[in-house]
Image (tube, rainbow, N blue to C red; front, top):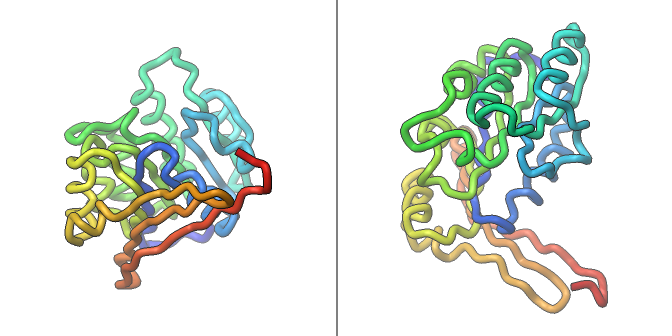
Length: 218
């Protein structure tokens, strides 16, 4: 990825099983980043990067000398998760020209607090050539700097009224637009409905993803 002064911050927000992972996996395949760091607390992105400890990630990035890498850190529980996440964000910021994927942001940020290195990535990462993807199940509970600086938001089903209201405000749409987002299970498929807004392109629209199931699958 070439350095750019244009911010690239993508938010994927929705309840568990609502379609975030499907969308992010597709986005990673589309982008095919040369340098990838993933905060992967649920061990979900095995197809995109090898699992390493935080210490191993630091060594691998230091040894990369600007060359490609694809690493994902699964928190080992030996330190507070927000502290470990902050170290990974600092690593991405210093490495430059990295796609940083941060999963389950409500585990490591709150509405009023976030690791300083995460804030730095969000507010200054464009000068380092960072492309940031972040995901959360509970938008009402996460760092507001992230949503406030997002250049693209895709929102899925949300269970709590506070979360639906938070996303209606972030997307500047009526609450009913967010309440209408549902994931529907059918006999042969699952239909995932979402609403997306690209702030830089000036576009916004509803959308859907249909996942087909093989006959006999449950």
